[in-house]
Image (tube, rainbow, N blue to C red):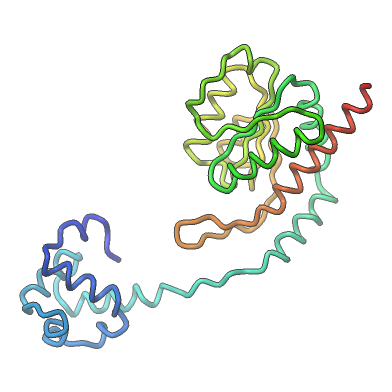
Length: 244
């Protein structure tokens, strides 16, 4: 309800009103302007200035907007991952994902090096992926810094595995574009195939589970990503064994 600009415009007294309203919104919607002034120890004129800075003509309109805002704030319900994960495994066994993973494993097999990139939880899984592939005989590394110096001749005949739930993160898209321009084959793992990252990839592995947000954090289950990474590593190991 309060924008960053609104909060920045409040003076000291108006900030005191803002802090009280933020903590006692459900109480304020039933108060008179004089009652709020007494609670916050400011004048009614200060309350009115506060309301105008908040985009309202007066205290009555402010209370109406506050009531609507509070009504929209539904308590967060953490969903069980069982349903999403079950759906993913059902689709992966009966859909094109297995075939796509085989193609991706062949690309990896043909490459001389593997590079994993991602940020946030995807960055953690990029590190896990690099370690898991290395454990199965394909020396791999992960990069979290888009400005990390890598010589072009190293990226030639390499494969970059990009992890991103949305496939729209500016950092990840920009970093992937740099790797592609340098000559690396791009394999992306995203939640859907209609994202920017998928479009700039040589092959995309999408898992389609319900995305979940808590406040400003993406808490979408990463179980499908772990499955895809481990399946790719095992498939790559099988291909390497067949060569020898």
